[in-house]
Image (cartoon, rainbow, N blue to C red):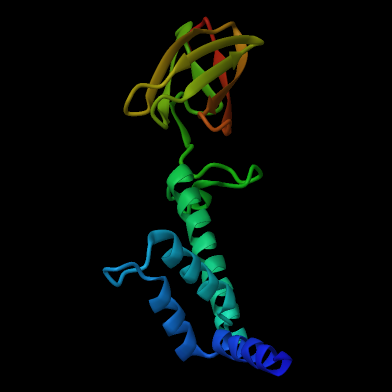
Length: 189
């Protein structure tokens, strides 16, 4: 009797490992309609996922694709938050380089000229909206150029040599300076 029970235990173990016998176990657990209950199906499905073995190649590829998708998500988020900033570096200039757009031309008066009128018109051209500072005999006058970049300012001269500097400043902090000397004589020659 002992041999029969051992034999039946061994056959039960063989049934559990044999796929054909697993199918028959499924058929034993079916209800009268031939279907598995939800919990029985769920248990069998979970067990089949746990028992499933994957190859090293599949494991490495799956992790590689997860990493790739994560990196794409990060790049997409960065692009969404900061936009296309790839051209910003082209607009930046080193601080030591003089701005190319800032020019200063003083048309009137000519350097080392002799004038007989006490009021002198200083005029010229620079970039639009530039701030101009005229320093004449230690006094500063500030004004802006118009939308075309033209400027003019009337200054009062003193008898003798009048040294003045005109400095143009742009919004980036760049500056350009021109220095001129005008001689004023009260006596006409």
